[in-house]
Image (tube, rainbow over the protein chains, first blue to last red):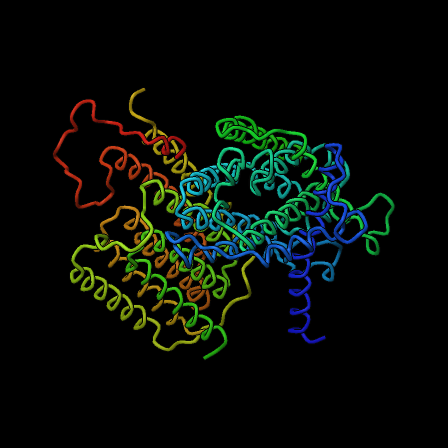
Length: 322
Length: 164
Length: 122
């Protein structure tokens, strides 16, 4: 295969994944939430247990009128939904789902660093949307989002740094190769911090103060309709995939399974682990109420950052002792 | 002209063009967004110049933190939507100085290298930079840490409301 | 690669930044222009790293890149403190135009904080 065709195929696979995986996660969320709350959830679309509900939702979003408020800053307002998707799609490029060069779209020597850098860009789209909407609720949501994302970036990066230190590499594939089962215990605090901070980074409940439908009437999304709103939703669900995949790769051993056969069945292990982590993300939405803004910052600075720092010391100590 | 030359020229044009928009636009927030384009372009220049790690640090720190803080500040100081005419002082001293510095610096640097051609080295890895950073440059590195701590404390002290 | 291209880009970027610093009145825009100048310097450092490494074989390789890293970190610190000062100024004066700041004019007592509740988390 010529090199450019190889590249095109890899990028196409990632783009398709970025549009299909969120639909699967969204549908799962509908059903999981419904059953946890003693409901049935969507049952009609597509005849069998409402499997086509999100396809129907998509069709509905396409038909809706695309409203841009008169006072809005139109180009910025229209650009924001597209920008919100981009960072997550770019991160998907470097996530390995199996061993070797065939199972990752773009192998990078410093993949972890790259992923963290690009993930930090999500907040720009939020600020664009919130400011350009010319709406007070949107602006408040945007300011909350900026404070939240800047704050949680710190424990997020520190926790990832711990595992990079343990593995002695910044390459995502390299980290999986260096991973051993006992790291589950050794890196447990880092994993919890990474996962919680990751939830806050993608603004999922219980960290959804920027959108907070019951107090800020959907925050920075308040003026968006139709396809543009759908894009923000899509970005949120790709975000779940990305956070679940990063947690899997960094802390759960990626493609490594308990029975050997990693070269052949590694991709299956990765997918199983990603789905399991994504399930926990959905579960937390049902299980916990939204935090207040002050509780949010308190959790970040008084719990997550100290734990992440302590984990760094622990990692360094064990690494030196070995 | 090699591939690197073409890339450098194209990205350079984007960088300078968007930088011009940063300093001339009459929308405050648009200036911040054009700054995003400029800084991304600069990161791309670093990539072409084989400084991979610096490029990603640029993205992480400049785009992820500095620009976000700037936009945050613009919004907190009540930037209005729409054009404003009172953003600039009289232009001609700025034009004079800007053209002067750009021209003389360009002449100086261009004169230093004329039309020399240089082979780009293999892409630098994080490992190599890290080795030099923690071997030859440890002391400055620690000092930068100290500086960051001082800046942190200074920023907190400044932004507390003055009553306590 | 002809090093003249990135060097000229850096020079132009520096000129644009200098223009911005002299012309802009809004303090935040001023900081943005200063960032442009810092980036121009970084481009020079990175290019010099490549060219000097090829021609002079210095004792310490990758020095340009490490300098650029230091500049980026110091710029982050500068922005943190700079924005804190600007927000403070905005709370005191309700304006961020740098040429409207009365330098020799003590504040009347009690007129200190017109708090709009937004700046607590900054």
